Image 1 (cartoon, rainbow, N blue to C red):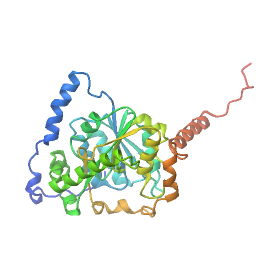
Image 2 (cartoon, one colour):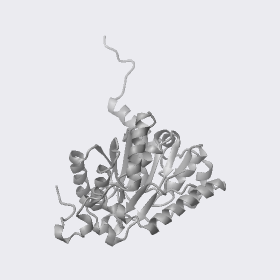
Image 3 (cartoon, rainbow, N blue to C red):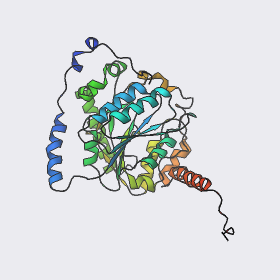
Image 4 (tube, rainbow, N blue to C red):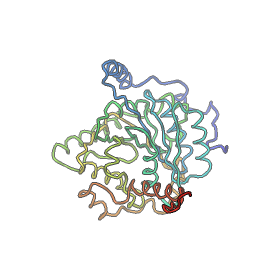
Length: 333
């Protein structure tokens, strides 16, 4: 398998990466709470599928998978939704399948421009979890991320959360070993924590004021109960390029009566700088502006016309074609 990341000499690593970091205060508090809830039968006993979207991000993807392998509460499975990456990324996925402490599944498609919504819909249909956690392939999770999303799970809801935007220098310092030890969690400075807490307070306040465009959602990190996602027909594949498809989904979910929960102050990922894997931005329509008319229509609709059902109809047609024509009049003598 081709090498994806050149190994650095251990002596060149900052001393911060040499020792294993203890779990955060929030994680230490969550463990006894989870124990009590399990004893009382209140801990959500649901399978969790983590949906990781990726395109030519082998270096970032290795860090992301190291973060999920170090989770306090391991997911049921990780489904990698790949938008047509080259052999480096696909070989890395095969490595994860043999080393990860959970099942790793790959859903891929031919690369024909930026088609994130399409590959996510395909991955949703292949997943088996009751709760789906979506995470971009360049967003490294804190070690308590799955546990926090799981403890806030409620049927018929979705949870939005924030991210720490790292500089290129911070991104390059991270290693798989450091992520497993929780070193990236030290990047949650007081300034960043204050900003995320303020974002959460705005979500709550604006919802109390009757704002419908809350809680704020970022497609790089959120979770949802499976049933609401199926009810609104998944992601809208009418969008081209990056932007507004996540807000469109939130609007349609709320139109259908499904409530959003803000976890901007509790559940975190580290968003790596895009320069870490520059090939991931080799997409002609990535920065195309979202269709304003299309997005405005999301306030008045629930189901998208171009969503999960496209792939379900396609699968049904494929099965029908594979079974061959049936001749009702031809019977054995």
